Image: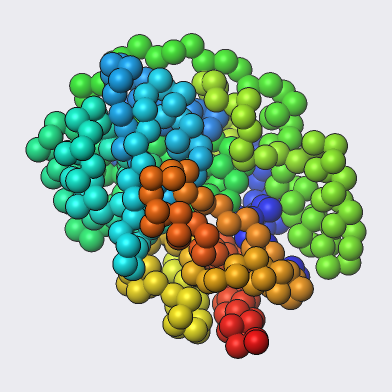
Length: 387
């Protein structure tokens, strides 16, 4: 069967049946209770993870000239979420040599000396690979800065100090969108861990439209059908028709930056995924370890490999020149990895830009078997030897 980086990557038949037929009454409250126990704070559920990030920043009620430090190598949604909160995003570059895809404490300290308006730091543990949270937290404490942990990629990640991601910051945000560690097609959450902000008034939430909810409801079913029939051409046709008619749910939509509550259906799926989190993390670590062991060392990053046992490994990054040629080569082998996922949003971050031009993210999800991972590594090694 064809291998995809995304396109319903987390869904098997059991998931699809649960999404179509399970009872969902009261699951919104159950998910909030679960998150409050797990992360020790007040939980607010949103339709998108980026809404949760914007909401956190709005709750802080900072002056308009205030800045928020974010990773220079990140999803555009993070940058946009800061702007939607009326604040100024400041991108921090990666280290030049052997970056682990997160900004370092030294880069943060340098930026803080140059910009006194930075009031908030967001760490994202890119692809689940942990940042140096102890030193970053210490800097925040010394300079009276607020720390937000963005867990979109790193639910279950362990920091070098042994603590789980989401147990350090003043706020944490989560995304339950397609292809994330916790995947309920869409969804997000803000957990306010700093009790100073737990009683702030919230903006008015709108109700998500029924048409969008229907697209989400059918997304696991549609994508399973596409993947199962892709090799016999019908899947390609079905995929084309759904996209052409705009019937396939998309994770990134410009019109969804308002605040929407999360209906019970999504909460039910998210709770189920949290119950399977350890199983999923173990699988992703096995797949990442196969890539690390079997791939030619010239495309690997030693810091990434070192952090595999602690990481959520939502993707396994490699670094190659002529990335487009490798993507085309793998496509001929029925391996579809064209969704690079992250770019650098900041021209002032040259190291992040360089990484964004060479990175290729390999799948680690539950629909990639150990045999598949070996095949992917073999194909990449073959391509590297081509003239």
